[in-house]
Image 1 (tube, rainbow, N blue to C red):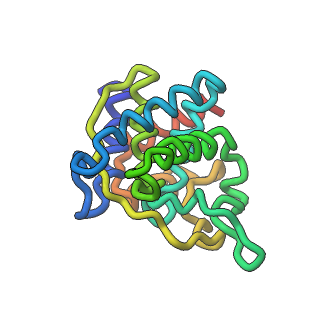
Image 2 (image 1 turned 90 degrees about the vertical axis):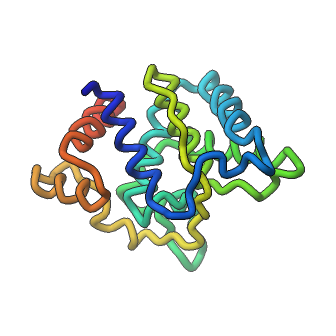
Length: 195
């Protein structure tokens, strides 16, 4: 099995975490959602080629903490330090966040889409698209995620693999997210190649 196939299996595992998800979730009301996201992502990639790996990494960091709910996008407030400001997330590139924000803005510019498509779904679509852009397969994603309403730095603690983790600890991190040893090696190798 090649690296891209393993990555595909990773994303499909992370995408199927909720019973409400289904293909063509927006087809009845907003049939161009995926194309709008892909176009916005394409424009961002033309501005900054780093967008490809940083979107992939953003998805990984989001999904490993409380599921794929876009809570990593929430800003800290005076009273709450959010996930994105936890030390494990400080290395996430602004280009990844910007890619998702630009896609959200493009969707919100369409009157009947405004505030109807979750950032969680946008990150999922964008991740599938970057996998495809770098030569991976095109695959359907199931949509219908709701955005997380809370985000705390404390929720990140212990949820993401650390560079100092041994194989047993790494295997445990991936297993609790429904991922195999093969998935762990494929994703770890891909992330290391982008660092």
